[in-house]
Image (tube, rainbow, N blue to C red; front, side, top):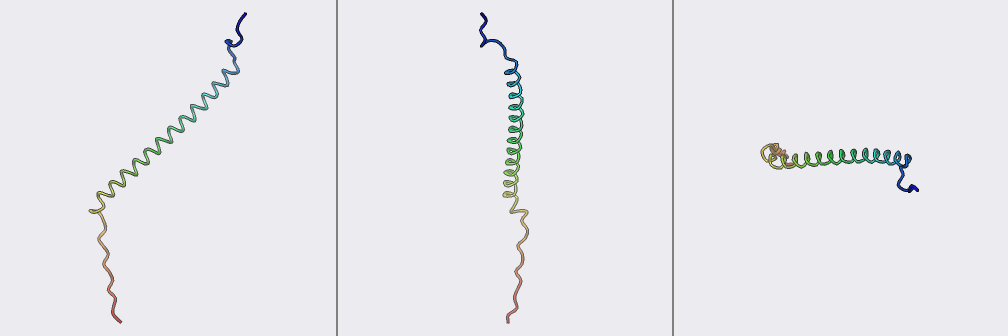
Length: 71
């Protein structure tokens, strides 16, 4: 007698294939978003470092104060 638990189930196979496709799509989107976030944070960090180190050289000159006339 053949064991029914070891036979193939085509409906289960189809369902698992669909679930695997959906999981792969979700995984790909999550990885892409995390890479975008990492690139954004890296770019912001580099911009802050560059602004910090070049800020003293490229800062606009201080504005002259207006003199008030007495009276």
